[in-house]
Amino acid sequence: MPTKLQRHLASVFLKIFLRDRQSIFFSLFFPIIFMTVFSFANSGQQDPIKVGVVNNSASIVATDFAQLLIDNPLFDVTIGEEERLRNELIEGDQTMILILPESFDAQSEGAELQLLVDAAQVQQLGLIMPLLQQTLISIEREFRNIEPMFSLVVEDVQARSQRYLDFLLPGLMAFTLMQLSIAGSGFNIVEFRRKGILKRLFVTPIQPKDFITSIVLARMSIVLIQLTVLIAFAVFVLDVRILGNFLSFYSIIMLGTFIFLCLGFCLGSIAKTQQAVMAVGNLVIFPQIFLSGIFYPIESMPALMQPIAKVLPLSFVSTAMREIANNGASLLSIMPSLIGIAVWFVVAFVLATRLFVWKEVAN
Image 1: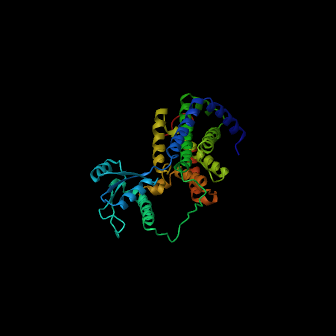
Image 2: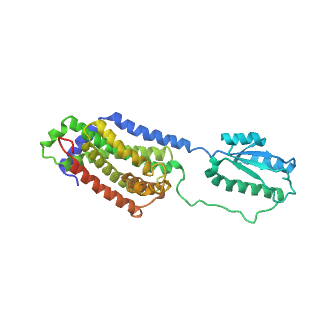
């Protein structure tokens, strides 16, 4: 439990931090804009697949076949000559081209349909081909009056949304608390040293652990308020669902905030000026932005990078928050992440107290 001295200092620092309303506003403004942009980008329906159809057959069957493709809302069909459609495919205006042969009619058996794709569409082709094949089979059944033997009814038992925004939110929250914490502690230490505040506190009975604990408490209060506003905006405005327990979710937020506040103290103790702490802070922040699974899963990274990415502090925090928010996981079920957070908790606090100096910059 914090001592009376630590609580008093925390209240003083909290009043100081709250005076910087401009910083608080913009720290909320950027994540809100970011989430809103991704929400609009993923709110629309899937665009129809652009398919060019070259009809080399003069039969009525081929014409009806092409018309059925046109009537299918899954496809945006363009009927035209092969040369023109090939050029559109190369330019990216078509996803694929389906060529109907001259022998395509009701009496044809096993007619070969040629499908042209661009090499750049190979990854997308794996998703489109099953859909196209199923559509072609359905059209064939209509022509031949063949009833399917069975129909498959798919029931989605997943309770969570599959939107990218739902995946992004926990990582964005983890990134926001890291940025707010490092900036809130590292920059404050340099500024307090520049103004001579630390020299005055040096002659008091205050110990480094008291000073660090009080700033952590004050800054954590601000971070929790800011993240609560962001979460409320995501849940009530953008309709993001958090399936897990909010108490568990906030527990991870508090632990992560403590870790990055202490790391910010380390940077503030090493750097001499605000320009220096900004440069050193970027060395800590930017690698974790791209390696901690904020925007895409760590498993999708190159195998060589995954062991490094998994041991970063932001990786443990964002993974734990995502498991709770997206999968409804309990604290016990994310024990590996909790162990990693606990290790960084101890390491960050030890480094912060050991490197902290009142008057001079640590060597």
